[in-house]
Amino acid sequence: MEIKVYQKIITEIYSDIKNVEDLGKVANYIPELGNVSAENFGVNLTTIKNESFGIGNFEEKFSIQSISKILALTLAYKLEGEKIWQRVDVEPSGNPFNSLQQLESDNGIPRNPFINSGAIVVCDVLLSHLTNPKEEFLAFCKELSNNSSLNYSEKVAKSEKNTGFRNVALCNFIKSFGNIKNNVDEVLDFYFHICSLEMSCKELSEIFQFLADDNFRTHKGNYVITESQAKRINAIMLTCGFYDESGEFAFRVGLPGKSGVGGGIVAIHPDEFCIAVWSPKLNKKGNSYKGMLFLENFTTKTACSIF
Ligand code: GLN
Image (tube, rainbow, N blue to C red):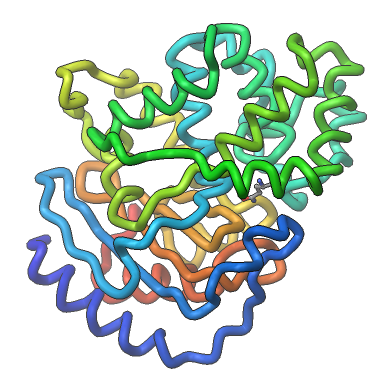
C-alpha cells in the first residue's frame, strides 16, 4: 500500500479516536510514569522502504517499558542462539505481566520472554555475555536504529528500583531454581534500565524495521538476526506480546505487537511496515486503551492484518 493511503487512513482514525472517552488510567505503580500527561497521543508508521508518516505527539520521547523486552530478547538470541529456549519458554502465560504464579510449577522457567519473569532471565543471559551490559545494550539499540540520541531515563530507572518489589521477588524466586546465574542486584539494575529506555513513536517505528524487513542491514552494514530468528520473535510477539490480553490483541488487531506500561505499542506487518502508537492511559491488563483501539481501526480500514 502507498504511504499516501496509510497517511489518509491514519489521519482519519486519529481524529476520530482523539475525542473518544479514554477508559484507561495512567500507570503510577512506577511513580515517575504517573507524571506523564495523559493527553499525549501519537502515531508513526515507517515502511520497509523507509517512507514515514507521523501524527500527534509522534516525536515526543516516552518510557518504552516492556517494549524494550523485544530488544533485550533480540540481542540475547543473537548471542546465545537456540540454547536460550532452555532458559525461557515460548508459551502465552494467560497471566498478568508481573505474575509469580506459574514459576513454581514450571521450575523457574518463565513462560515467555515478554513477561517480567522472562525478561529478567533474558537480562541475566545478557549479563553473562556482556562486559558493560548497560553501555553495550544501548550501543546495540543505537546501531539498530542509526540513532545516537537514544538513552535510558535515570529518573525512571531509579523510580522503578525504589518500588519494584515484585521484580525483586521474581528475580530471587527464579534464582532459587538456579535459572539466574548472576548477582540479583545487577540483573535487576540492568532490567530496570532497559525498561527506562525512552523513544518516540517515530523512533520506535524505525528501530523495529529489522523485524519487518528480511533484507535489513544496519547503517554499518551488519545484519541483525537471521530470517528464522525474526520469524520466531514475531511469532512470540503475536502470541505473548500483550500478556493476558495477547489473544484479544490478535483477535482485534491481527499483527505481531508489543506493549509497555508507558502506554506505547509497536506492531509489525512483516514485509510491509512497523507502526507505533502512544497514549499513556492503560486498560486493566496494562495495555494502552487508545493504542489498541487505534490499531484495531487501522488494520480494519486498511485490511492490513496478517490474516
Ligand atoms: N518495568 C515494568 C515492570 O517491570 C515493565 C512492565 C510493562 O511494561 N508491562 O513492571
